Image (tube, rainbow, N blue to C red; front, side):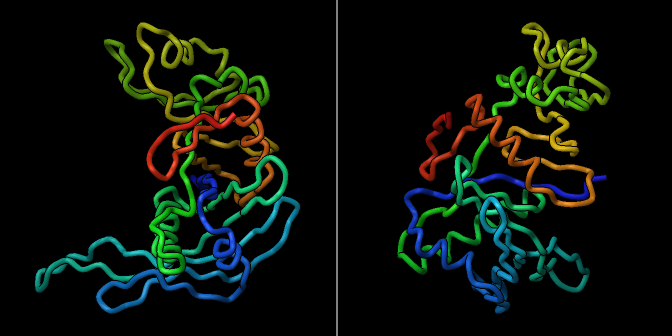
Length: 250
């Protein structure tokens, strides 16, 4: 069972830091970014706590529900509110990295909601948060040397007569024939879609799209920090710029 998930972003260096600081610094504030059928939709900043990495924020976000079907009228969506947490880094190597603790889709909804807020403040149509991806396939040797004992991996698009996708759990899977066959073998391997690594007493399931999840029943910051530092060390983070170009973060 998944207890928490998070996605990692980076603050757009082309955005006005004054506004970014303002929106994430003041507690008990509501920032309206749109509406649906007359109902306002907002970001809520409830609490801001300073920790050793920067600011940890309790927040909430209005999103649209799934369509409610009815025989008497067209399907309808309503505004509902989800809670999430945000870690903003303002120190050392991880300065301007942002972790959003929410399902990947809802983290993306939060990122999207920031865009009209920033546009109304500056008149510029820019994403405050830039997306990241993790190059797990090319950097698996470094990652498993730093965090040995892979407990899980998943792969799709496997070029095998019998196996087309696989999810494998176990111990020290980086040394297993299954990992070689489905991820590394040039003749039949597929695309690696997740790795489960033991990091700081927490097993993180890491995905190439910059997200991760864990079955731990709390939302730790430290294991995510250790992973990001390792990815920076090996050049395993890819930054998606606001105009779509890909650059390596080394």
